[in-house]
Image (cartoon, rainbow, N blue to C red; front, side):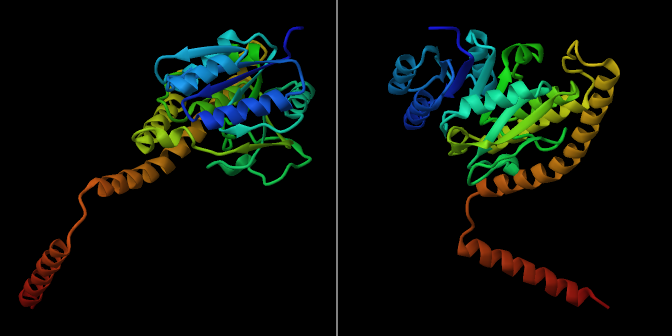
Length: 302
């Protein structure tokens, strides 16, 4: 057996039925030489044993280390020129690999190649059926969700991989796209490949997931508004890098204003939901107090 053209890296945290369906789609529909690397993030025994037996190579973590750390672990053991970072709640279609690799090889400035997906909270790449278009997404726009990200292995290393400072929830994909954009690289969207995606199969199992999203978003904004620069590739002109970095900072400042308002409302809703429900007696007493205040105000009026 020759060297693989593609390393397929997938994370698993329980949800065995999703992982099994994903693995079956990889085995039946990957039409290039490949290796399957499963990183198990602290699953129960049955799911962890399946990861060990189903993968060409497996990494079994005793606890959930999160998306970024798990993907970096898979990257560290990958042997192919290209790596497909995948969610386990997906089903890959026939010829998915050859088409995405073709797109990557014909777009030398591509940092990430993504397929269309059937479901996501981010609508950028959602479709109900495959398309025919291959397009470059607008720099510093809403990045596609990291359901399937195909990248050159050496480029991921040069960009310092996935940022492990994010909590177990979200944010790493946006961060990685911004690192590509400041280096004048492209995110390429191949509509010819449509991946079935459940969406939030893992995130929905996390405690306080909404608060984690808020904290991760704040980490992203602080990082990109701040003065700590991401890696600059040797191939990228320093002046272009500085100009793109300034654009990234301006976009992050705008995002901060928007999300500050949004997060404040969300935190208020979460706080209200945590309070015990008011009984009918509470509501009547509150209405009575309000009525008495209004009567006092009317009597005091000239």
